[in-house]
Length: 143
Image (tube, rainbow, N blue to C red):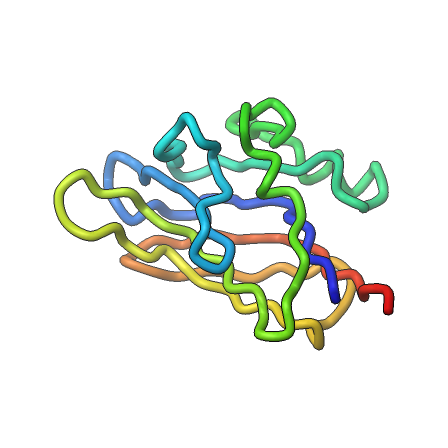
């Protein structure tokens, strides 16, 4: 089974003028921000970075710069976001915007399979008028 490792999520443009209330799901299960939080506020320039990802320290340092950057390890309960096994059916990553009234909005989706290109990947997600960039690693699994 391949392994998905979250590296970063950056808000380029929120879907709402006052920012988004973001949470992330893996195959329909909420993995971010944590069990005691419904969402985490994001506005243009907000970034979360997994500084413990399997990248060279210079690459992680470059990702972890910026005024509105938070290291994932400082967010209580966000451990499940760090990595996940990629089942045969794929790993569906959904970045969501919490709405108090009405259904939550999908800010973007990403389907990772065990056939995904290995190494660091970066994808731009578009949904509900917002734009986010997600970076991640895919490593081959061991048989």
